[in-house]
Length: 327
Image (cartoon, rainbow, N blue to C red; front, top):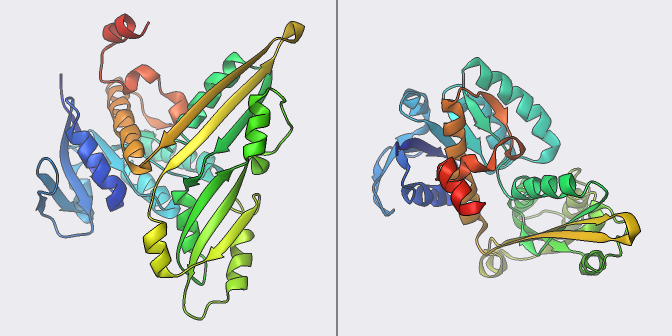
């Protein structure tokens, strides 16, 4: 089996998990990790890792089959994917859905021009939940879909909080509406909006001299993040933040209900419970890096999402093995 040559760049927490995951794959070879730090060989992993300065990344265009972009910040991912899809097939982990159509169009244009393939917005939502929702609604076209987030740390929303004027540090939890969740499971099919399916809780460390009420109002009025949900804001010390809010768990429930002739009903439920979200996200990125490589070899190019990729392309097995063992 030929080895897929992988490059990795981005935020350290997710990057480190991707490095470990790539090194555990039989069909992948880690070529280099790119960062702003001085180039060196890092031995803190199970295998030595070559590090290169980020400005040298384009020099590796003929040595890397797929670049995994681990940047979590909205603006970083948006710019980096657009830039690096000139040189590499790429996969990326995060982008708010509100900007995804524009991002897809721009990356598609660049990737096609340079005969590259990019797979965007790979995580659990958007990502795995998107894929499962498509499957559920395709087989139950008459019905309702409900998506509940369990008590989870939202990395994207937390990063957005930290950019609010007057905020020194922050973390945001998404909470499920338990009564609505149980009502759906009982088949009562309540009419509730996405905003009513969850609420948000923010823990904020203020910058010195910041007005807490101004900060609270600025957070609760943020469009696309907090304005459409009930958001409770708590102000805490940096010590409390360090002691009580360093977890990165994620959980969620997707339910599709359907009603058919003679009153017969169906309910499909998909659950996801992650003790450490970066580890899961890394696994998703690595699996879809495999798909990006395989599809690029077949001549595909442009920008894709998880909805466009055949599931068989992410598995480290050939078609015959999958048919024999999964069907």
